[in-house]
Length: 448
Image (cartoon, rainbow, N blue to C red; front, side, top):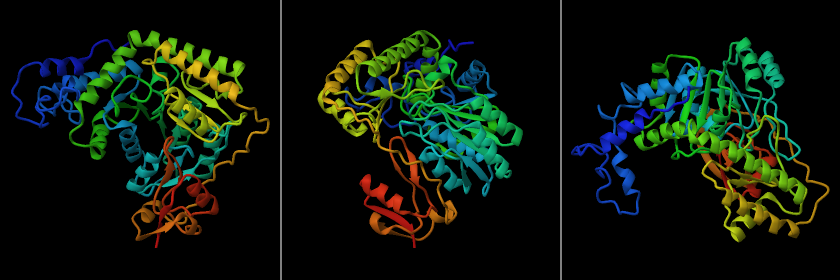
């Protein structure tokens, strides 16, 4: 059933307007002393863990009731609000699914937070095969690749998949889960970019853990996310979450998460489908009326827009710059041949009209390129040293040009999308040094 009651938000509203004298954190005491222009209307809601407001990591009433309602709404065993983004859920899920020294099967397109968690937890990666689409972005992981990898690595205790990707492409999660379940491995799905898909019935929650950001694609404050689980008692998951989180989680972010979900279960659902129609209209027009194309697969996010420039004389970076500099349209990110836009239910028809008008003005200035640049398939990282050992090893800093043949101490990534091209313990190759120089990375830390 849809979530129609806002227990956390309503309780917080009542408390914020109760007139209670504040001898507790935070120090602004409901927004006093802050300038009127600095979000002062919301400051009364910025409170700490009190008997009246409940505690995210020891919930007794409104938070406990809201999380139970959330789990019931989406048909999972447990659901936990996160105020530290999907990263917090990733840390907790990995720590519950693999013991220190254990091996985890990783999607090559995983976010840097996964590598950071692996380093801290002392886990060892086994990377899945990776291939590229015609547009030069990582293809979704296939069930066959997961099956093959688990056959070769029967000691793997967890499988980590990113779906949807930054480009909106989705893996066959239900089929992959059948494979991992048969192998006795926990499946963790990083669906940070799939918040909107929750409300279109396009995001399976069958995995042991699925972490979903709300703030990326839905109207919620930055850091609002949810961890869905079909394994472990809720209390055990809460303990792991508290291990990696601040002991003072934001009630503002918490309330915004709950309000976001109830909004999407109400009037937001219709707005979401209208958004999907707007995105579809724009991409169809783009394909027909301009030299540009767009990335799409049957299982992809219906609202995500990825403009592909590979058949034109423009790079993705150049188009991104033109949209920003000439038309004040700021997109999410760009790469060599693509520009990613993340529209949400908060974008209006006027926003889409402006985007279409801008692309209509840019298109006549663009020449066609009939031979797209050949994209290089991503390398499977070769580890010469345990990741944790390398990260905490004695290190020295070298210029990118002199680092070839050495072992990296750090994770290097172009952000966004945050997919690492170099991780701790990895042998630095000529290809890495070229990538660093191309991205303007002048120095890198290596093991002494």
